[in-house]
Image (tube, rainbow, N blue to C red; front, side, top):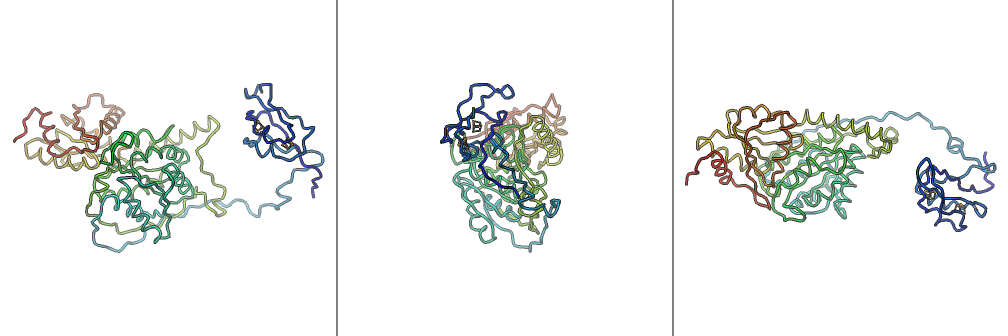
Length: 467
Ligand code: SF4
Ligand code: SF4
C-alpha cells in the first residue's frame, strides 16, 4: 500500500504550456513567473517555475486549462496510485454496444383530421416516436411548439422552452447524442441562430429534425411567408463541410408524412434533417390522414447511454489531428454521396408531354399546379416539377426532361434561391445547354398567385392573356 507523506509539487510539461498565465494568478507563493524563452517545439512561451516556496497546494494544477500543462510531480515520497490497486481490476471486458431496433406498432384507424400545417408536423413527430422538444417560440412556427407543449407531458415526454435558439440546439445535441429523437419548431431568424449547433451535430453525426416555417427576411423581416432559407438550409448549415437532407412539404398532409420520414432519414444516416415549410403552409388548414402505425424507437449502438455496453461511446465533432479531420470529412462526403443517390424526391404533374416546365415547391408549388391546369386549358403544354427534397436536388428526375422541354419557369417566393439550387444541380449533372430558364419571383411575404404565373408564362411564350 502506498503512503503519501508530502504533497506533490507541480511539474511543468513545457510542450503543453501555452503561456496563458492562469497558474501564475493562482499561486499565492509566487512560484510561477512569465517565461522568457520560446519553446522551439511549439513556438509558444511556457511559464517558469521556481518551487522553493511551493507548499504543494495544487491550485496551479487545477487552474491550468491544458490537460497536460501542469501535473503533480511523482517524487520519492509520493507514488502515483494505480487505479487497479484502488478499485480492483475491471470485472469484465467491455460489452459490445448493441442496437435495439425500432418497432412499428399498429395505430387504429381514425377519421381524417382537419388541422393546420404546424399541427400536422407536430403529430408526425409524435407518431415517429419523438418525445423531446427543445425550442424558442417564434412566429409563424409557434403553434407547432404549443401543441407539443400540450401533448408531450401526457406522453411522458420532455418539452423545454430554452432561453434561446442557441441553447435549444445544444439541448438537441445532447438528446441526439443519447440516441433519442428530438425536434424543434423555428422560423428563419431562429434557424439562423441554430446554425452553429447544427454544424456541431453534423460533425458529431447526431440525428435531429429541424422544422423551419420560413418567413420574410433578411434580419427580422416580417412574419409573412417567404422561401427565405433555401440557400441557408442547402448550402449554409454552419461552417465546414456540412449537408443535411432538406425536405419541402407542400400540404398539411406532407407536413405530417415528411416529418415521419425525416426521423427515419436522420437516424439512418446519423445526421440532422431540415424540413422547410413556409409561413402560409404552417398556418394552412387541410385534411390529414394518419398512418396505420406509430414508431416505438429503439436505441442505436453509438448512443451515449447509461448501460455498460454504451458507456464508452463518445460523440463529438473535434478532430485535432489534421489527418484525422480529413479522414472524417472523407467519411462525411461518402455519407453525403449516399444521401444524394438515395434520397432525391420529386412530385411530377403533367410532365410527360410538357414543353413548358414550371418548377416550384412549398405553397408556391400549389399555385403553380393551378397555373399548369389553366395553361393547358389555353393550349400550352405545361407541367409541374415539384422538388420535395431541395438538398439533394432531385436532378435524376429532372435531367431526362431537360432535352425535351423548351422552357423552364421557376416559381418561388424568394429572390432566386430555388433557381440557384436547380441551376447548380443542372451544372453538376453535366448539362451545359439547358432550356431557357425564366422566373416568377415574389418576396417580402407575398406569394406568386396563379393568375400572375399564368400571365407571366404567356408573356414568356409571346402570347396575350385573354381578358
Ligand atoms: S502547488 Fe501551490 S504553491 Fe506550488 S506552485 Fe502550485 S500554486 Fe504555487
Ligand atoms: S496555466 Fe497551464 S498552460 Fe497556462 S501558463 Fe500555466 S502551465 Fe502554462
